Image (cartoon, rainbow, N blue to C red; front, side):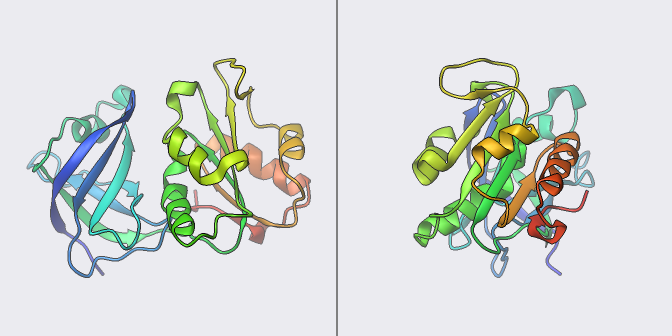
Length: 224
């Protein structure tokens, strides 16, 4: 298994107020399927053993690897430390893993940073001209929290559906994802579903989907 690769940061910048992208060197022979992740640690004596899972957001054909990482300052931990890193600082990549990958066109449901496994999938399918038939329901607290809003709109058009829990706007739905919301925004439930987000949201939405007739084997998630 691939593990223990030390890589330099090639580029990094903010994409929202608390989310940054990190593009890093790609070790020779290091491969992943869109939607997969790896454990990442910071190459310093204090943090080398502090691994955290992050999803690849780059295309599989890119010469670099990319991660999109949200900072959680209340944890005062690894994401805080990663957000302080600059170009030429080093990360350590470990084994590639993950159950989320594209099976067939369907509905993607994401909460906050749970969008990251879908970014690589959308970019991959978009590069192949195969995004038609896919839709995204994206739940966030406020408009400023929406990761890659412009790119997702360009990729998905009217199939990019947003809902905000803490901010009312004229553009987007307000509230939390409910069974009625799903019935209103999804045309039929005999299709593939992909989900990633905070565990409480995942549990409630999976319950709604099953009540609406979606088979468990039609819901792709990372085991919780």
